[in-house]
Image (cartoon, rainbow, N blue to C red; front, side, top):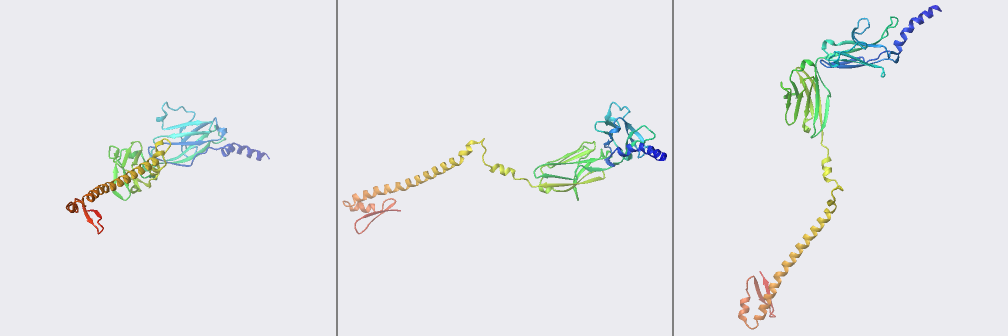
Length: 325
């Protein structure tokens, strides 16, 4: 029984570390020259304990980089490593700036328990600092006529190198920022902020712009796929849509068009009737004149047989007919 008691007492110090350990993600990658922020969560019983961040995987051989009980500088943005504890959230965060490729390796966040019989609560992360290039999105999509922007991040060693945007398989299509850090024409704009990101904006997209491209810096390049969707018919629908209440004159448009059309038709009919009546009256008056002169003066009748624009004929009953020609 005494032996069991001794064994139990020796195990008790390890129980908090097993049940309420510090947790952190196990892997993280970042481009050289960039920054990372790592959240480390801990159990409620560690609320008032000192937290720390060190370079290494074991407590014995971990090089201390930051502690919550150490005063930070007055300019946190210039600190290589910063640590901040939020007891209400039961979490402390660690930020590392301006990372180098040589700083890749294992790092650990821990809670100091201050007792040799009880090891610190500890969690490790594998950090890889990469020298290279990556795209924020490997595929972008936009509607025909619109614009899309591609962002490509590069490591610090590529800061002063020219950046390029190329269509895959066609080196002659490459557009370069040159040493000025920018390029622009009617369809493409490229801008390098010289801090780790260059942006490519494709303007007024057309269906032929769809395809595979690459953004490159130095000898590094990363692929990006561009998709273009057909333009929607919203513009046509807005033109053919019914008139809105804010345009009341549209209510009478069809009525006015009908009235104008009917009036024009009636006017044309009236002019046609008038044109047909005028020649008949003129011919009738000439016929009367011929009929009055014919009995008394046969010579005058023969003269009227061929008057201007008319031919006068006599039938067997002595009736005079006037024909126009």
